[in-house]
Length: 311
Image 1 (cartoon, one colour):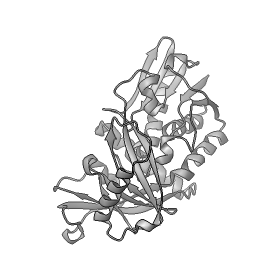
Image 2 (cartoon, rainbow, N blue to C red):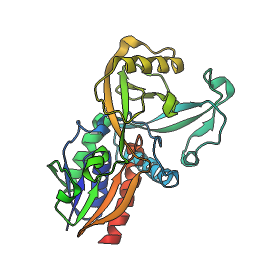
Image 3 (cartoon, helix red, strand yellow):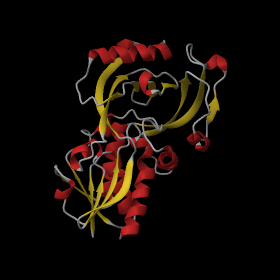
Image 4 (tube, rainbow, N blue to C red):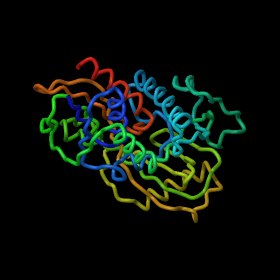
């Protein structure tokens, strides 16, 4: 039996790869492929952001962390690098539970904390260059025997096949009539300057990040819920730069390379569950918010478990 995966973003491709590795026949059906997916615009630093429920997502994030390290160290995937970053917070708090799984995590000394903040920590995590990683995932999927077909569906009922994995992201709002799915608009800036280490304020209201990669540094950001506008806004560019300059005063605006916009597929809770629709079995895997890359391999492994139960 052939398994149909709907969607070729990072969730669809990693899920397709895991299913192929288990020996199943897999076809991805999708409207867009890289470089035209929202995953291609992801920053992308491993960090569980804008996603619930944390009791599940923490586990999937840790599993993905381990797999990204394996891909880097064992398979030699060069577009995955390890970089340190410092997160600054307004109040003293307990570190997140996922921090216990990280090989490098420490609380910052007071003199290391940027003015206006009261607390912070340093961590080392994978940085993924999505413009290279997405083509690598697609190549891996095809190398394992997966097939891909460009196709747009208005409804999940229109998809042929008895077992469907729904990785349609923001498209799930229409595709399976889920009005809990909303866009969270993110605008980023690419700059040819290395800050040495990443600097982060991960609160949605004041979201700020500088993510150093080998090709360039990604500056952000915005987290505008319900905003479908994919055009670049000069006002947001200035807003992002002013926030980043507060954390990184050495930022040189003359080295800006480009600007991009993506719509994160947000939901009150990530949906990863089985649903029966007529004679079809559908396994949903969408609503990852700003943590699609961070949760990708852990969620793909969870999909495999659900498929095994229903085969």
